[in-house]
Length: 317
Image 1 (cartoon, one colour):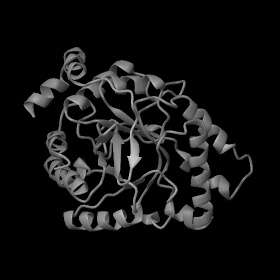
Image 2: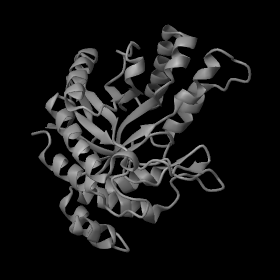
Image 3: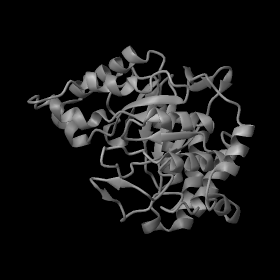
């Protein structure tokens, strides 16, 4: 912990940058799906990720505006064995992907199609969602740092029931097709969760699920179920975590350790921990009543960061 916090206390990322860039070969190839696995070239690619954001946007709506902070965060992630950054709800600028590539990271980009799902019922003043998505994808299409696009994140179960399963499935498929029109080689998923696991999304390149279970045995059993749903496609745990405010930092660390190890033991291609930092913004306000970060708002390491670093170093066992 002292060593990690010494890294985190560094005022600039210059020293860490020299280490990371000096030891991480530059990459130009994007991951591809081969059966149940992701590959980069001839090597299997294991996703060892953290969620990053949402952050307070500036007056122009730019959420990822502080390039120096982004670079410092990315250098520290790379120094601690993290290779993937999930941007859950906002199309990041291309400069963020450039920084990710610089530090050997891949980026899972969220397209937030869930925010338009209500228009499937009430089409009054409905935007051209496919066109909006295409414009977002064009900003980063073909970038080597792209891991995949996530069509959306957890369309509410009550809304899915109201709209109807088939209509939601067609909607997600239409966004999938729109993405492929702009970036044919880009991998596409949708971030689902247990309440709507019944959606038939077999057309996606990989299956991604947010799962919050606080029992190791229950998580292992549920992952076996998800592997059946995934079939011959890769299964990615796109969000796991535990709140420190209600459970304590030591319990968070213990939980993240077995969550990561269980995910890889059950055949997942990787896992994304929510979240890199307690700094989190939602509904035009800072979220202060929970603390899922493995670092504080000031980027002081919690025991959870050490647990994640160790587990990722040993994955996939």
